[in-house]
Length: 423
Image: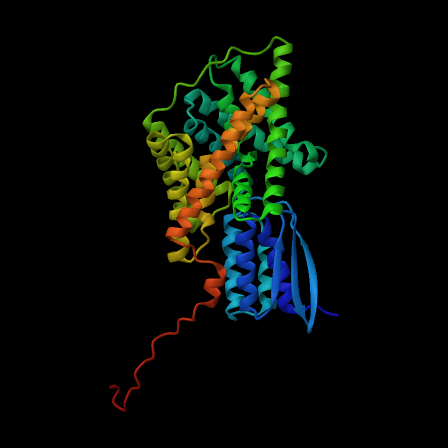
């Protein structure tokens, strides 16, 4: 029996929309709004690796299991998929045409060239090294190592041989380069450099999503997402700790120091560099690059002000509140996904960095210091979720379901003209 076009479109939309970094509740709301616009009764059960759809087709209840492939943040694809869902839900295009548009969207080549993506892989770590308290030496080292890690990560993913050890090998590679540079750049902060170099691998967004799902009562999805994020952190920490130990045993560990921080001008340049790097690495639309810049500014200023005024944990909550308000206002009044603002903002806040520090301390040193930092990471993630929840209570974002159910705006009726052209 052939699949109904509405169901086929819903499956295709689910498969492509699920890996783009949303919580289970957000994805369920989007899919439910689209199915309601299609006049299709459907229920959705979302897991990090699979989405179960229960729907009615030809008068019978059926179940479909849609596997969720591993994906990366893609702001352009996210926005275009939501736009296609609204067009189909409002009846402006047919489900068959919507399925074809999604296929064409997936098949198109990346908008940014390989050279730009590699440049972003180095520029982002350099900017984050400054934002994490590093100086010029740390920024230069993070630029070189971040570029090298991007090339290594891409080659390892293509070969497939290191698929199970991708995070561990990338972290070990970054730590090895940082310690080798420590023999050239004396007394520089290698820890900050390593953190900034592998920031693209840190699961900060997944940690925040997992805590948000647990807070919403979705224990299965939240626990699974936090478990996956914990394994990523463990692989990264073991890779760095292994490299650290080998250099110590070989008596080749360099004399390291602490970063002296960056000047105001360097911080301004870091914000600009981070916005450009995130626009490329997260594939923002050209029209949205300015909004990514706004998100980075809001996250940086709000986090520094919050930490100064209320301390680390509550300060991060204040920054999350500011980023969430900006994203919700952008979504509600400009009718675009809030992820354009919230994802770059959360990337700057880097909740995964402290988790990496905690597990690295636990693996390399033992004791309670690593556990304390891990608990602090969970508290920071809770603060992020509380801030975003308060932001949604103040200004709710506009969902796909709301956009589908909005009445179609018709042009004003023109007055009937008389014989002489007068009304």
